[in-house]
Amino acid sequence: MKWNLDYAHVAQLVEHVLGKNGVTGSSPVVGSTCVWRKHSPFINLKPGHFSAPRNDYWGRGNQKGAIEMVQVATRALAVGDIAAMARSWQGDLRAAGKSGATRATYLKAVELLAEFLDHEGMPSNVAELTGEHVREFMAHLLEVGKASSAGTRFRGLQAFFIWLVAEGEIAANPMKRMKSPKPEQHDAHVLTHAEIKAILATCDDGTDFESRRDAALIRLMIDCGARRAEVADLLAEDVDLEHGEVFIRQGKGAKDRYVSIGDKTARALRRYLRKREGHPRHKDAALWLGHRGAMGVSGVAYAVRRRGQQAGVEVHPHSFRHSFAHNWLADGGGETSLMRIAGWRSGEMIKRYAASTATERAIAEHKKVSLSDKF
Image (cartoon, rainbow, N blue to C red; front, top):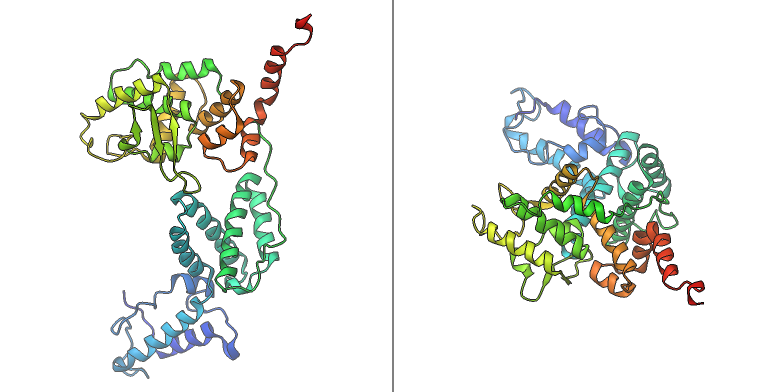
């Protein structure tokens, strides 16, 4: 692409980008400085990209000077820019062993903040951001979405600013005294035994590839309560049918763990693995295969949702995790063991998952210890 810029354009651009007396201003050539920093077309310019008249001050022989001037301005403005900082942070998150899902969630929070700052004409240099800027952003999120979503963005930004302080990019954390939005209290839907039976009935007795796969997939989620991403990321080698175990690698918090499976789940997995041998992509490492290869997180969600629709049950992969936790506790399973199996680090997660059915379990326990029945 050629940029029709003469010396006057370049001089005007540099003057406005750098600002008179060291004050950064808005460039009439490319719009706001925020847009200039993020989308500057000059950062990789080479001689010949300018289409300048021969009588121009720079001339065709001196275009390199014009290019260098603009590139210096670009690099000066990039220092401290929130988008540039986010790109650097991404590498550190990966080095710290954060999962792909966690990295994406954190970076999305920073991306949304950057877009908000740009739209509102607020500074995008991290050193200039204050708690008020972040509070306005959080207020905006609460206006357009749910408190739970805003809370997710809050935690991502919190991690970002903590990193900036540790890296010496900012002197203080603008979110230090801020509190996360309180999420709405919704009872988690726990599938009834009748609903689970109806879902399994859509695929349990089928002999085609998708039926065998979906039966194994759903039974595994029912049996071990693993997260959707953990199930989707399973490799064929992670299934140990001899010992009735499945290896969950790099779960949330980058922690590996083993989970046990029952006889019916093991049988469903054996049936699926036999069918899998005939799949064109059977040599792929991924356990769950679709038409084109590994199903991935979205493929797992689609398969569960489709079976739910066939059964007339509203269900998503996380429904099985809620149901697993409830049934574990209802059957007398210990909280410490549940935390280990489910991959939780805090008992708070048990309270959140099990709160909706706590009364049901309490009544069932009461019936077992009825004092009147003893007389």
